[in-house]
Amino acid sequence: MATISEMVQCLKDTRERRLAMEKQAKEMKAVEDELTERLLMEMGAQNLKSINIEGVARVAVRDTYHIEIADIEKLTKAMFIKMMDAIRNGHSMTDALMLQQRVAKSQIEDMLTSQYPDGIPAEAYDSMGLRKVDDRTLSLTKN
Image 1 (cartoon, rainbow, N blue to C red):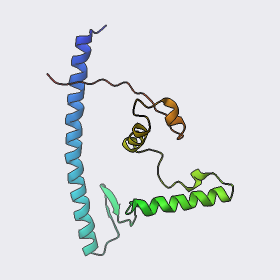
Image 2 (image 1 turned 90 degrees about the vertical axis):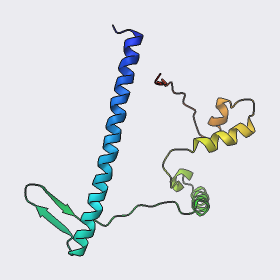
Image 3 (image 1 turned 60 degrees about the vertical axis):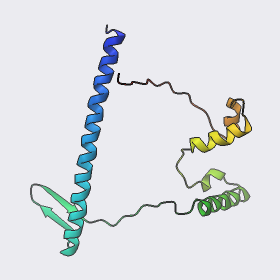
Image 4 (image 1 turned 30 degrees about the horizontal axis):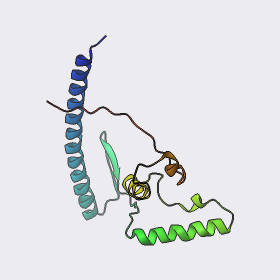
């Protein structure tokens, strides 16, 4: 069985290797992104929608999209209106949610801290449909 000292050394070494690999992956991603942009420009200049390089790969230009929040106030108002419509029609308010299920931790804590300056009780989270989940982590600092 390994000692605590040996386990700490192993954790430190493993973390250093992971961080080095993540740095390398980030650098490789930058090269990949640059090559993708250059290919898109070159294929566009040659009016190519796809090309098959025998024995290597086939690449095809695809037009897709993603959605970003441009005005949080307008989005919030739209969701509120949809929630009210859902209630009026006997549906769940969650049918109108347009965000992924992750809350803004700092905003929730700021709001609750102002209501409970002596400490936030568990029922405060529960009253909002939230649950505070405690995680135990290990901090490793180089010395």
